[in-house]
Amino acid sequence: MKRIFIYVLFVCLVASAIGYILYRYKKYNAENWSYKASDNLQEINIISIQDLERQAQEIIEAGAFDYIAGGAETETTLRRNISAFDDIDIYPRVLQGVDSPDLQTSVLGIDISLPVIVAPAAAHGLAHESAEAGTARGAAESGTIMTISNYASSTLEEIAQAGDGAPQWFQLYLSKDDAFNRKIVREAEALGMRAIVLTVDAPVGGNRWRDAKNDFRFPLALPNVAPAGGQTKGQGIGAIFSSAQNDFSMNTVRYVKSWTRLPVIVKGIQHPDDAEEAINAGADAIWVSNHGGRQLDGGPASIEVLSEIAIRVNKRVPIIFDSGIRSGQHIFKAIASGADVVAIGRPVIYALALGGWQGVVSLFDYLKADLSRVMWLAGTQTVEDIKNADIRPKCMMVRCVE
Ligand SMILES: Cc1cc2nc3c(=O)[nH]c(=O)nc-3n(C[C@H](O)[C@H](O)[C@H](O)COP(=O)(O)O)c2cc1C
Image (cartoon, rainbow, N blue to C red; front, side, top):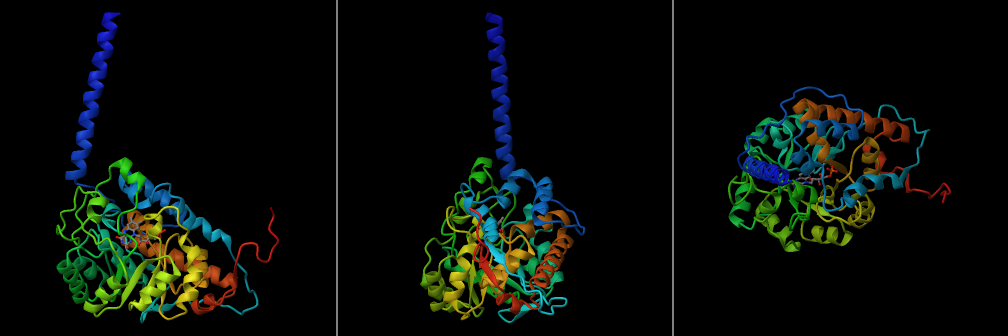
């Protein structure tokens, strides 16, 4: 009996020691990691974006995948961003003589090949070794705008170079360090970026349970972040957000407008009164978004607030929309609800992981084909026609089954 007890005790001690070593090793890795992201370079065959996500999950490191795919807390808003599209019906017009719909449009004077642009998302280096430079090339080849996150893992110069003159916007998380704000915006201006996207829905990071559980830390530097100048490797998103400003008002918009010559787009608007205030403060465009469900959990889906905001904006400035776009049908519904263009976040990162810049081109080709088909079936020839399409909340015309 005594021998069994000693044996069990011994096994427990060894197991604890191994556990502790693994814990230290994981922590050490998080801080000193030589992270290996995908280096795939290939066209990808996309059946659906849901399927794309599943495939990407197989090749992105688990903690990084959770950081990308996850949202705040229970992820209710994240899920609702997608499911709420099902509560809108498109009433097709089948006698409109539509032939090969025209997807081209423009936003803030920039012509694009489809009404879909790249949303700013941190650390594309988690998905692919070419990081944002790869995404920039893919967006450029696809004829659309790349919005570069302030928390990108490539430098602005590398991204501008890869874009080769294609339109790019720079997203700014306003730093507490005023000199840094002006410096990074000057750099974006000098590199030919065509707008500043001022994100105002992240005074603090959302409470992302998956990241907390994984103790997720960036295994790569984020070279465009103040004030540490890239000393971000090994830090979690909370630590990185701590250098950012955390009180936003109309004055914030006026402040940025006062020292950049670029148009300022205010990103993260979810309420008509905020849209009004942003416009009054000089915003050149409104970006309706709930950050892909990564900030406040328990709010409405982004698509649920869009039409009310669009009515209030009343075409005074363009509206960019994101959060939950996964198909041509979603793009159609968002534009019919008042958006001028939509942006996509996660799908771009998944496509980058699976195929590098060629994967990003495949994603935009997929969206072009999917949107074209929906436009054709719904009876709309142009993007302007989508704005006048007949969409209704579910059950308006057909009697609902209880
Ligand atoms: C991994 C990841 C990182 C993000 N980083 C930023 C960021 O740095 N700045 C920002 O304004 N929004 C950021 N976002 C939010 C996106 O710009 C966008 O609002 C959101 O992804 C849209 O939802 P979707 O992923 O469902 O398309 C990020 C989103 C993801 C998924």
